[in-house]
Length: 315
Image (cartoon, rainbow, N blue to C red):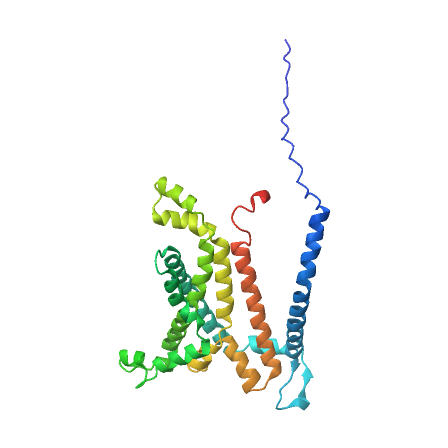
C-alpha cells in the first residue's frame, strides 16, 4: 500500500510596492518657484548676517589670541577647547545653567498651561485677562531684573523685609532660586501665549464627544488636548529651553555671576570682555552653540515635527 504525501507551500502575500509621489503639475512647480523666489532675499540676508560671525568665531577659537598681548597671537588648533573642557569653571557654569534651565522651563510649562487654559476658557473680560497675564512679558528683562534686585536688597526691598531683612542674592542656593523665580515670572506669559495658540488646534466637537462618552476632565486633557497640542508644546519648550540655556542678562543684573551663580554665557562674557581672551571666549561661545544645537535636535527627535495624523502614510 502506498501513501501519497502532499506538501503544501505557503507563500507570503506580496507586499504592495511603495507609493511613488505623483509628479507636480506645472502650476504647482510655478508656485514652488515663486515661493522660493520670495523667500530667497530674506534667506540670503540671514545667511550673510549670521554666517560671518559664526565662521569668524570658529576661526578665533582655534587661535591663542589675547588683546592684552596681540603680538603673541598664534594658531593652536583645538587647544582652547581642551583648556575650556578641562577647566572646573566651565563645568560649574554648565551645572548652574542646566539647573536654571530645567527648573525654570518645567515650572513655566506647568504655569503656562494653566494660564493658557484660563485665557482660553475666560467667558467675560477676556481682553483684560489676557492683557494682565501677558504684562510681565512686555517688560524689558534688564528692567525686570533691576526690580527683582531692588526687591531683595536688605533694608530697602519689600521682599527682603517680608523675609526678615534677608539677603538671598549673597547665597549660592538662594540666589539661584531667586534667578529661577524671576525667569519663571518673566517667561510664563510667553509660554502661555504659545500654548494658547496650541489650544486652538483642539476641536470642541471632539471634546464634547468625549464628554458624552463619559470621559472625565483629566482624561480629556491627557488623551485629547495634550496629544493634539504636541506641535505647540514642542515649539514652546524648544524656544524656552534654548532661551533659558543662553541666560545672561538676568544673572548679570542680579548677581553678576558671584557666589558660583554664573552661567556659561556669563563665563564667555568674562573671558571675552573682562579678560580680553578672544581665543578662550570664542571657544566657549562655540561650545554654547554646540550645546544649543544638540538640545534642538533632541527636542525635535523626541517630540517629532509633524502634527498628529500626518504620519499615517509612514506606518
